[in-house]
Length: 234
Image (cartoon, rainbow, N blue to C red; front, side, top):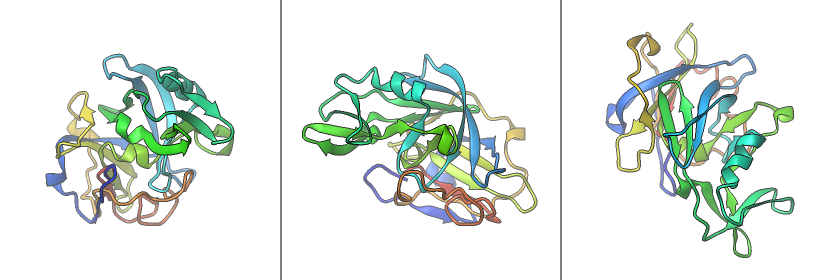
């Protein structure tokens, strides 16, 4: 997936021309029917000072925004001058000319950078814009949902080998818009041993906030695919 550009999905293959470096695979918890992962850290403005925090999240192409726990959300918008949590707008807004920091998520040996340009989703009201990072209510589901705002940052592979454990792979995009970087080489043992049967390089935004594309049996990363859906971050 790409920011304000068309993306693509590849099924049955992983196109090595669309990513650079190594792919970091992380295990998936699909006990609730989603592509669930645990990220181990996050950073605001820089990847050199990551906050160590385990966050159980689902990676979901059917969710437009990047939804995070309240403490992470508040920490981010404390760095945005003029930002406020608006009941009328249903989340954090900020002056459209505000300077936003990049946001980083650590997943295994990979650190994804969500660029500021992807976090400004456009006008909310008057001179204010709506934030692409918003609150994930744990009473309604997982502690976080890494939706399209996140997926735009990286090359992402959804893999469900026949009879095996599902995994999600992350790598930096091959082109100039690439924003994720491996923090250390992935060990060979972290890669799936079976051949992926589907891959994809992104696509259009998957739908409304809170969607559950990650559920059983479907194309965009749904558990129960016999293959992988790899996407290249939108």
